[in-house]
Image (cartoon, rainbow, N blue to C red; front, top):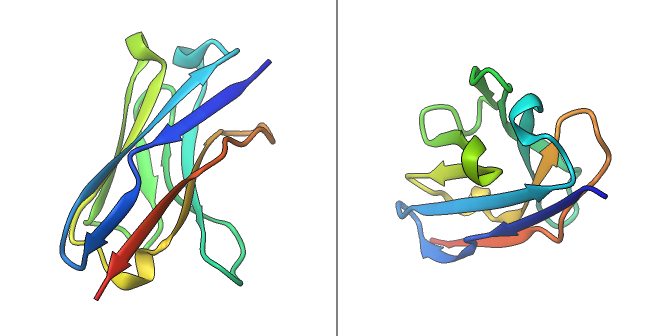
Length: 113
């Protein structure tokens, strides 16, 4: 059974940084591409970052240059380093095994102005 556990969210002032983590189980992690999504109240869930199993990455335009996705295959973990945070980054952040419909509980990120 696929399980995803996100952590690392919190309250931060605009311009600050946070590092999110997601531990995955129930998959052969090193063979799977992973992604981070976010959902703000009243908005649809949107993908913000993607990392392929071979390590290539891409980002939503809204976070490009500020967020960095990375992975540690030895720890079955995907990270999202978020710098220069803005109030519009406020959302619940979820990780996802690309191509699967499993979701974790998410982690709340709140950026105050």
